[in-house]
Length: 426
Image (cartoon, rainbow, N blue to C red; front, side, top):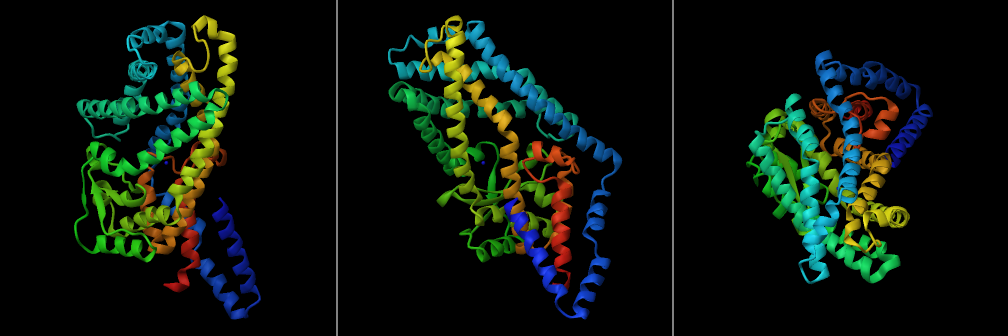
């Protein structure tokens, strides 16, 4: 499962400044003095300067390496499709699956085996990217056995739920034919919503242990922010993310009756109460601003557009290479590797658009958090901790293309601007 609000805030700020000019001279002088005493740009730079050159170099190297991994993962998707279609693996799996009498069962077996073999083919890159590289940058606490156990759990979930979804999509392809992509989009969205609903109860506990946050002032303050903003929460949950890494994080997950506020033990152990409060206010903002439901609406558009383009591209590719790959038409389950590659390719090139939307909602949640917690400095301290694995000060286009959250510099600067505008209210 982030710029209209920022633009609105800027406009309101300009409007307020215009009003100040029309007021008395003493008021204008007061604003001038306040600006001279506290400069958001200077304050932001002071936070950035707390990173040593070595820390900044390490953070930049890790994050920039991720850009290349996006490309390598896309090329791996292409390689998987080529191995399945050109080397006969897809035909062999279909032969195995064809022993079942029912076509839907055949497709279900094929899809499950596809996920298994695709995982094995991409395992070397996955091992480097998510185990060796994470340990190289001191970002993982997992042993190889622990990491592999989580990988197997994730793979089994993919096989179970992914196979069911794709089987239903191929039923839609066979039954509806030309307009299959509309029905398939509906199937995919329903499963996403189902996953969001059951996630906090059945999925995330497979990877981490959740327990109610210890009673005390911190829990009371978090719940107070939630209640004051209409969040129906009567508990806050803590989970043991420290077994995986030292990264701080928190979230508001689930929908409807399964919605819950959670924070990881790293956030508690590595942060001050004020920092925890600031982070949790941001997460509560996602809930209050209905970001999860807005994300579902966005996802509907993404899936519909993606499936429509896949439908168009599949027909073109099958006409040209279908005989060579022994793929008769779109409804042929052997086309699945191509189907998945084409959708992945769409997502790869659409990433900057999705990142822009994501950044906009994150900025909205940041501003909500500033107003709810009123802890701009604590928020900035927490953001500096994220610089361990996020490049803190990217270029403008770098942030637009690659960042699904605002950069650390952007978020701290926004916090310091908020602080400057509220100094007289302290």
